[in-house]
Length: 262
Length: 224
Image (cartoon, rainbow over all chains, first blue to last red; front, side, top):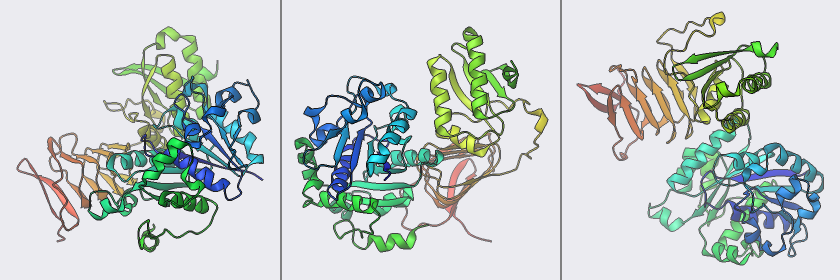
């Protein structure tokens, strides 16, 4: 068995990278997949908080890389899902503590034992971002339907293209269909029109996401909320299932997409 | 010792120009590092332009070099190359791809005579952060997204949506034009004149922008 390394990145901060990593990881793990999440945001870690594992950190990513512990010791196992692990970031160091080749080595060591390695990239396009994409087999770029987030996503996709880190897939997060209907928000189509990449998920705006993150209980654990379902759909699509984009996403969108794909 | 002769270092108006004559990217970096270790004082605080000829470089490699140079107080600001891949890489990292003056005749061996009017042909989409510069006309097949820039001494033709910043006739040619299937640039400049797009019109149609009596005018494209 060899794992797929999936990096989630965005360029802009605050669009939902960490939340998505947590939710997709939970959704994959609840389908019986073995999943390791790596928090690549060294110095500003918070994937542990969103997953509710903060109080169990002993060793972190930098400890593994600098040889202070074995890889297994830094992997925190989630109690709710037996096959979900987190390798937390160091909080007291910065991005230069890790190099892209460290990340590649680390992932290669993990690959034989798991199905998925999800890497949470920091915002920006500097060292931390390069660390996060270096080992990636697949990159998910996440954006919100607003002009500045889309602009940054465009830049990141350009860099990923130049580095041949394909195939890139897009998640559009926090879509508010009422605002779209009133013409106050970019629609999914507007975003795709500009970015011209493969779409893997549309996540509706949902207040439950904030509540769930604060509690450390990712939404896709129970999967009744709209956002939770959307994240589960992303996980299913990652696993190769053909999941139609549902009504709550955007009616009839899928057909139109198929029609216009280049 | 042999390695070092692979490099030529020359003082130019904007700092130092290092020309690599041959070898792979790794050999060039090695040679450059050896040279810097030899004369750290000479390089300290320098503005460096690197000419790597036809060598193809990826973003990761180039940004690694830029970072390692900056740790030693050397500012890499330009990468010159005949490879379009390398040029795109440098542009992605926000590095210049030509010196402000005409490029010195460093590669006399492979004399390339591009006629002044030869167009640069670019495949889109040009994403945010991409910068295309050319001393002739530029043709883009695909979209030009917001955040991308085209600076051309000649005209600019975009077979797609033009939503970035475009400057035609950048060296002062007032006869240069800009045309696109959907002409809605963030900013449009021809020679010394600047304009922004009016708010979106109802109908999207191919348009052409030109200078008429010193004013920028955009009108629907009419054949014949």
